[in-house]
Image 1 (tube, helix red, strand yellow):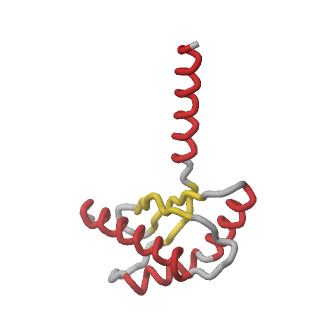
Image 2 (cartoon, helix red, strand yellow; image 1 turned 60 degrees about the vertical axis):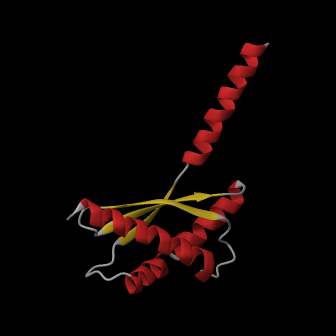
Length: 117
């Protein structure tokens, strides 16, 4: 399947899941969530949805539980909104790149402060 089509489907899924989480999920456990990227397989049978969670560890755990519970609903909604023979099987993955980059930034600032002394 064409790479351009796969990229378009990935972007569509990312936008639609963001809309679903923002406006349609009524689970009070779900806090601040950002869909960072979607990686679909070449045959579009499955897609990995990477999300970034904000808050303390308890809030993140509650949000993760709410999102995994709503995964079937999100897949059904994607199936209604996209014109494809098969709706991709969705799986959630935690994206920790923001935390990783913040940690790297912190270490760089610490090194600069030590060099300045």
